[in-house]
Image (cartoon, rainbow, N blue to C red; front, top):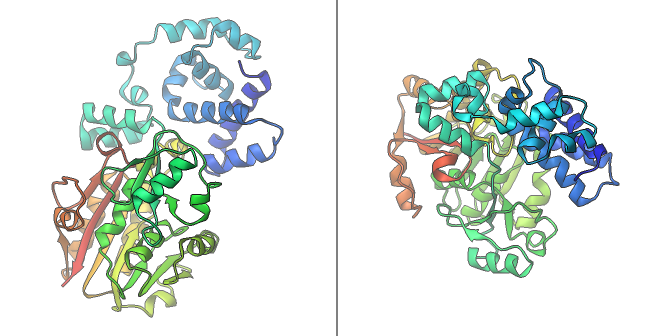
Amino acid sequence: MPHPSHFQLAARLLGDILTGTLPADAQMDRCFRAHREMGVRDRGFVAETVYACLREMRVLEYLTAKPKPSTFDLVAAHLVTQGYSGRALEELGYRGDARGLAERVRGLDRASLPFAVRANLPDWLAERLRAQFGDDETLALADALNRPAPLDLRTNSLKAERNEVRARLAQEGHPTEPTPYSPIGLRRAERASLFNTQSFKDGLFEVQDEGSQLLSYLLEPKRHEMVVDFCAGAGGKTLHLGALMANTGTAYAFDVSSRRLEKLTPRLRRAGLGNVRAVAIAHERDDRVQRLRGKIDRVLVDAPCSGTGTLRRNPDIKWRNIDLAALVEAQTRILDEAAKLVKPGGRLVYATCSLLQEENDDVVAAFLGGHGDFHIVPIGEILARRHIPLEMPGDALRLLPHRHHTDGFYAVALERS
């Protein structure tokens, strides 16, 4: 049984995440830096408890039978669902009705819960997903979103073949399996920190979801081309694009956050890439962007979005205020500006890690309505050329956790006439 102080810490950390502005993982890192005396097992208990509460919060709130349960109530409810007795909760210092809580857990009939509670989603998101997918598929999707994600790796094709990296990791005590779709992906069912492995230090892989890996293949970059990753962040997809170009040509990494781009420098060095230029921009109309108008062969726009496709990794997103209208406005604006970079005959890939039609199909439809010189390239043709064994009807890539075991992604390839 955990120490009472760790029960208290988990509840306080959960509160900090729900009321603060930092992402859950950043808030957790800050917490553990302040409690360096904690062992690995104790940190594991706190982290797993907090993430479980974030995933299951609607059901846990229901179990507390309180209109505004405290984070101590939520943690206690989670522990009871994991087999802790009312007496055990009392020994941990829980001051609520521990026995009554245990009885409610034992009598819970999930099938009778309100839809959004059963799905562990906020009402606004549950209703949007129901409208898109229907009840049964939304529940299946929600169930997948509320489970921890595996650990996906993208091997560095400049340095080693996938099987070689797999063998090296196995020798270091980290067995993996090939991902089903990405030809250079590896998957580890159990999460573990691999950053201290020699394979990582040698630049043989990066941590990247399999769905994210597929986005770069949709761009189909060629040697000696000019490519732009318009919303590069820390550059995970830029690294992949640079490798697909065989370290030739130029891959520009644009982002409005210089702090995020700074993280790309050591990754480039480790990967052995010399064809990437990181450029911090003030906004999508920055002069450094405008100078490249009509000159770029391929542009990737992995647009800022609600992140609803990444809830397996970032369950705290569900409980944050999301201004969907502002996101759609930004996506539309960024896509319009990024399209100006594409030369005739060039390609633009618009992608999000959102599940919502407003951020995906609606943005693309509005763009095509105002840009008659762009047309959609059937996604199945690209996947076939890249030998990716994924049947995808329609014009867009639509990856869903319950179907494809990736994060949720949307992407469409557009070419300029």
